[in-house]
Every structure is written in C-alpha cells, then in structure tokens.
Image 1 (cartoon, rainbow, N blue to C red):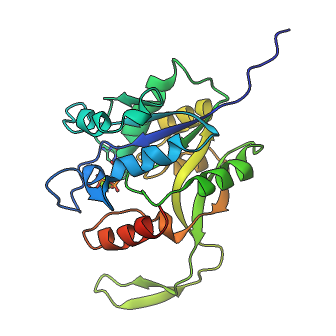
Image 2 (tube, rainbow, N blue to C red):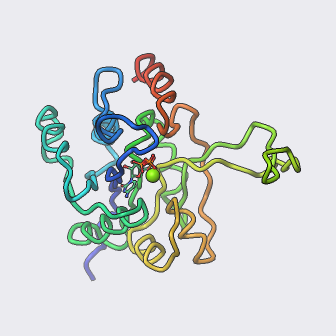
Length: 235
Ligand code: CTP
Ligand code: MG
C-alpha cells in the first residue's frame, strides 16, 4: 500500500465582485490601501504563511485589473494562480474556483476561502484557524463573539425586541473545509453568503474559532480609513 500524501492547505480568494456599495472608480479589491492594492495585501499574507501550499484567486471573466496588479508583484509569481471563473454571486465564484482547483487539490486537502475585501488578515490568524481545525471532521471559520446589545426592529424601524447575544457570533473568513465536502455543500445549497452556511445545510456544525476585529470586511467608503489605520500600524 502506498502511503497517502500529506494533506495540504490551499487558499481560495473570491475577488470577482464589483464593489457596488463602495462605489469607487474600480472594484474595491483593486483600491490602494496603505500604499498597496487591497487584493495584494491578502495575496501577500497567504504567500508569507508557510502552511499555505498555493493560492487561487477567482476574478471575473472580464477583469481588466488583475494582470497589472500582479505585474507589480513579481514575488508572487508561482505562488498565485488566477482563475477567470467569477460568477454572478460570491457563492458561484467560490464554487467555480473549487471546480477549477480539482486538477490540483485532492478531496481531503483543506481549502481556506477568504474574502479579497478583508485585507486585515494576518499569518497569525491563519495559523490560529489551521491549528484549531486541522484535526476536525467538519471544518471551521474565524468569527467574533457579538459584544453589542442586539435589537430586532419593527418594519417602522422601532426596537421591537432585544435579542440575547449569548452564543451569537459574527462570521469572518477564512472559512476552512476539505475540498470535497465544500464542493458538495456548495453544489447542494441554495444561495448562501458564506461557506459555513452551506456546510450547516448538510446538518454539520463548523467549528467557531475566535478571529480579530482587524479582519473586518471593507464594504462602505467609511471602512477605508479604519483599514488603513490597522494596516499602517501593524501590516
Ligand atoms: N465576490 C465574488 N463574486 C461575486 C461577488 C462577490 O467573488 N459575484 C467576492 C468579492 O470580490 C469579495 C467577497 O466576495 O471579495 C465578499 O463580497 P462583498 O464584500 O459583497 O464584495 P462585492 O460583492 O464586490 O461588494 P458589493 O456587494 O457592495 O457589490
Ligand atoms: Mg457583494
């Protein structure tokens, strides 16, 4: 019997969105932040993390920015593969990326799916997630326990009820699952906004691993200043 190959860890970055809520001149992942394009912050972080075997980035079919972005990042050559496989939704972009990775990734290899719009991720957080999940039968994700008092509103925008925050978490990325399980989950799920939801729909319970406030998702113009503060203070 041949010994089975060691399990590998791949990063998959959905970066095929248009950034409608940001309303910038280009998709937000190509905006400069603290002197570097948002997407390059993310790609550099994964490239600097020894545990990650390779990174795949999913861009839209008509993306006109990625070649120039990578031309200015020669150190990433050979470490990043661009897949022009973006879909109409994040769900579809990730699913297309997983299918394109099949040539390289085995079913038992781990895939860490991470939003291009979370440039605050660092290697320490990636390692924390991998250490916590690598022996888990399901997989897991970075998330933050909710600290605010939560209100459910009436249709008129008045506080109707206070929702207990006990055991409530806000999901972040990376979300880490084995390739075969994640592919099956996303193929079967109705439209989801993160990978964990698709895995939950299979009746499984992904592990919640404490993330960091610096790993927030850049969505609106006012998020940019805070992200630059984090990235300039501690890149
Ligand atoms: N994404 C993607 N394919 C899509 C939509 C989104 O790969 N069809 C990616 C985005 O590029 C981003 C991540 O999914 O890295 C999270 O999505 P979001 O923050 O919503 O980004 P956008 O969809 O670009 O922003 P908006 O919803 O404001 O248009
Ligand atoms: Mg979106």
